[in-house]
Amino acid sequence: MKISTRTEYGIRVLLTLARTEDDRCLSLTAIAKREKLPHAYLEQLVGDLRRAGLVSATRGQSGGYRLARPAAEIAMTDAVRALDGPLLEMPCAGADDLEHCDRPQPCSVHDIFQRVYESLSQSLGATNLAEMAASAGGPPYPPEVRRRRANGHSSTTTQQAARNA
Image (cartoon, rainbow, N blue to C red; front, side):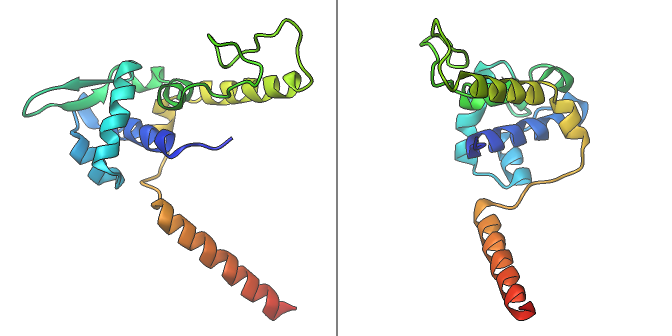
């Protein structure tokens, strides 16, 4: 399973709102600056978060976005589904519910996919936004910096291994 950039950025928006004092509204510009995220992309994400009932918008001079309900009531399953759809799209799913098998008899891979789905659902469902907001952390490195650091780290490790041999 790969966590999409869409989900990462959306959760970062939710965390920024959860960490905002006094239930104030934050503009997308303020969120984008704090988290070092592209403003235009956030406009798309907050639309999905609004439709899912996770954030609400207020128009006007002091308007912006805030959480639609308390952070402790927003599970990570809610956020992931709002941003990317099903937690795990089952290969044997029906058209109406992509997370559950629709076949009369389970297939050969049913059990493992069911266990993966249940594990994801349980882990993400047991984690709420308030818990995440209370933990330390700031914006992660942008993807290009992460790639550069990973490439630099692996070449340094390779160089060290060659010296030690």
